[in-house]
Image (tube, rainbow, N blue to C red; front, side, top):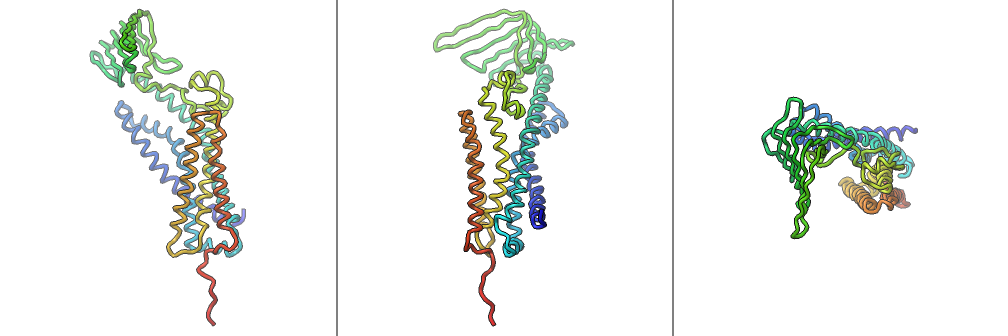
Length: 379
């Protein structure tokens, strides 16, 4: 790699490290604050809070890196222009297309980092986070239930336990599930045990009765069932129904491209949904080199001005917002109809076209090269 390319690339990488650190810290602190409140309110230790925040870090980094790449190229190009280094490079015969080469290498490097995160670390971290949430849900079951007290762990749920035996058995259990006012359930049992199955923590109710009240218009129907043993999903009761492997984002890209029956049953999705999620992962890293090139190419447009390049910076931000808007629109369209997953690549194509247009405008014949003027000297 020529020396000038190494110089520009080193400038971009240094600024990228700074902006990435700042943006990740801000974003991560905001995410960690909500986790901190939720977990400490459940009586968890600081180590558990730290573990959960670390597991959210890969996702945070993958979101922040393209923005950091844009900020690094925009700020770095502005600094090169202010210090007249960019003018000297252009005066030496380097065209905008030639100057864009190290910036493109930088953008591809950031895109590679995002690819590793999206296809490897993020699914692994999400799966581990789901496991830990299930474990905590199981641990908190008996601890959260106080004998002799009516409790309301979530809206529509009422739980009462008369006593807890020394071996962990729950005695004389009452559960009312009225989350759906038109379809209410009431469970009573002499004993209950906390257990865990493949879908998460459950309560095994022993020697009890289930009552189901259905309301259809003016009609009310009550069905009573007596049972020797019944499983009740307390993961849904205490933590909103989150289960391990219930989200497509928990799985690797290879499994999403060729979804098996186990994955489809666990997530409740169809093969088109799984493939749409895989292609969304392939499309996301493409934003990084595009963001870097937009930040660089836009600042090359226009000649020298004592007021700086704030106008070009605004146009660069508008260009990035346009690409991000198209990305969100494409994701929404593919979410409504997973068979239209090719639209996920449209924002990248638009971004590439925008970068080529900006570089062409910067290199077009007759454009001022950024000098202070070409007037002759007096003799």
